[in-house]
Amino acid sequence: MKLLEEVENFSRGYVRKGGKDNRRQQRARMLSLAAFCAAEGAHSLAQVGAGHVIRYWRAHRHLSDATRYNHWRAFCVLWRLWKNRLSHQNPMEANHETAWQSVEGKMPVSNSCLGF
Image (cartoon, rainbow, N blue to C red; front, side, top):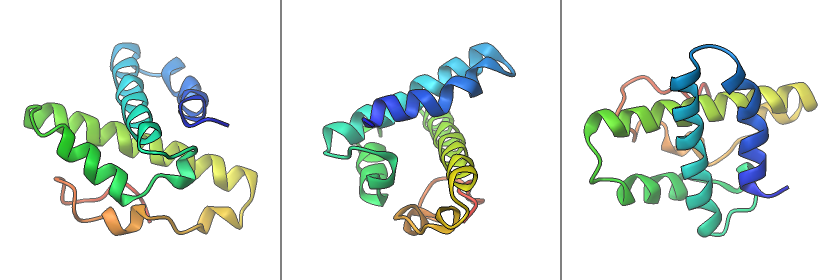
């Protein structure tokens, strides 16, 4: 499955519930990260690593702090959705270590949302 399709599938149910406007904005941010990572050569979320996120972050330094924080929160939701999907598919994959663990602590929020 291609990365953009994977993110669309993960976020489809998320957008249907809760505050619609905010969730649509968060989905757009998730797809922005997915498009960036796809351009960098990632074909699935499992291939997205710390380097992708750091390069995305550096490419979007021009955004305001509030906007970058909103992007970060959207990424947190995406990783949570992905982790939940993995745990439902195969319990052994739920403990799958990814490069996201090395990103923890390098982002602008003190409490990581990655849950690892």
